[in-house]
Length: 284
Image (cartoon, rainbow, N blue to C red; front, side, top):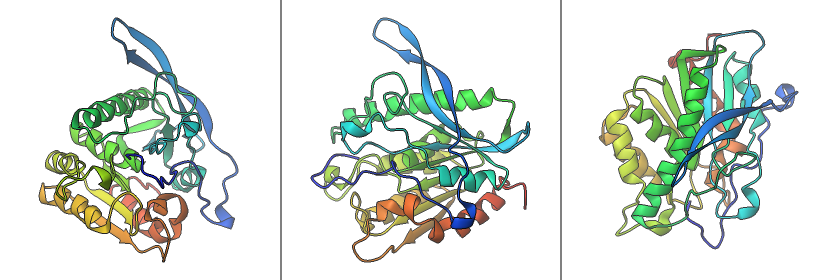
């Protein structure tokens, strides 16, 4: 997101699923190796990640979850995103979840260079920089014996949602689907003549990606208008993307960008069915 005067911090709190399904752990902290490209040479670094894995050796269907931005607040760069409720939710379905922190976030090494700008080059550079961390995470999962390589899915919130779509579109046969929660790279402050710089990313993903995708957004989002969000979905679908689009009204004065972390009760049944339809939920 590009910074605004009333930036809402997202991606830094965990939702609980229900009293009966309260998580009894916060996942396993692991490290993901990555080559950090420098001007003169590459460095070997590690990304922090949290792993939720069912008991046993697997292989298990696996979801890679991509977090959102800091909202331009440097204090949040070193906080680890860990939606433990989502981990418990998936493990109960015999699905593994890995939550990598991109470079410069949490305890991941490297610099945080996901720029907050409306400049087209800055947007592209920051986006590509973020994709490199996602690529390292995907390659790591491919090397894990516990991960079912035929049942991999991407999911993400905010910047992580649109990153997931874009990455999956560049690897069209690698993932069974993508769940995009409130996805977008920059907010409406970057719109020009009513057009969002996010639209070409959605169009490109829709053109390339054949796997079914699930878009989940909330109305009254502080970063995108309802009209902008509807354009995201339409541009993706018009480009050929297979889309199920859920657009929730969360209540008066409620920020729609909170839909992933605070409104599980609205979208859980939809995600339940989506996981069955994409053959990720092996219990069904």
